[in-house]
Structure formats: C-alpha cells, structure tokens
Length: 170
Image (cartoon, rainbow, N blue to C red; front, top):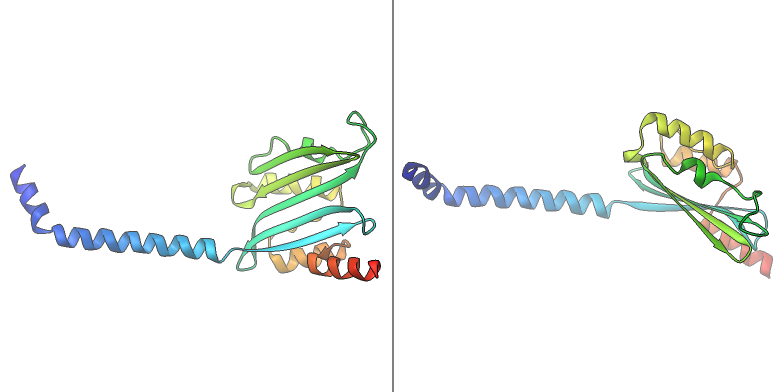
C-alpha cells in the first residue's frame, strides 16, 4: 500500500493537470451544446383573433431536437366532445409530454416532443396523429424541410404573423 501512495504523490501534479483539462473540456462542450440551440416559431390561424396552432422548434445546426405545439380549440363546456383529443392520443408515448388547459371557451392542448428520446416507431406514430390536425412533421427532422412543409400547410413565421395582424388592425 505505501508504494501506491508514493506513486500518487510522485504523479500528483500530473494527475491534477489531466483532471483539470478533462473538466475544462467538459465545460466547453456543455457551453457549446447550450449556446448553439436556437428556436423557430410558426403560427396557424383561422382568423387574426385566435391562432389555432403554435409550433416552436428548438434546433441545433438545422436539426430539430425538440418541438412544442399548442393547439387551441373553442368549446362550449368541458364535457363537449367536439374539441381536439390530440393530447389523449399522444399521452403514453415515450419522449412526448402533453397537457390540457381549459380557459373560458378555449381548450389549450400542449404537446412537447423531445426527438432525442423518441424512437423511430413513435416518431411515425406521432406523425400520423399530428397529420389529423394538419400539423405536418418531417421524418428527417431538418429545419429547412420542416419550415417548407409548415408553410405549405398555411403556417406563418411568428414575425410574418405579427406583420399581417398589424396590417389587418390598421
């Protein structure tokens, strides 16, 4: 045992330097991964008073890593079956978190998807379910392709939506 302690004492400075370098590398990687994440927002509306779907992509280097979708639907009362049941269909899929919130005469269904935790089968299932509410999802999770697909479906960027809303108010 004393031989082992002597070797540690002998290489103490080298061990500290190596550990310091590893910690520095880990910090740099962590900063890179958090700083380089960006968001893109899209809105679909029936009129300029009530957007029906908000889609926010979180992406890194044109690869979508997360998607947050909020669907708003009018309803008469909480027992009314005519509102979207999209969150119920997505409830038990690993990598997807859903919430439902009732406000006045609108129900807000929020779907949060972490594509890093979503299997290929669940991605395909997610695409099928989201197509029921005309919110397309690309299989390659490429921001450029997803943007084209959403715009083709009638979605606007958040900036374009604001411009049109302001023009309509004038």
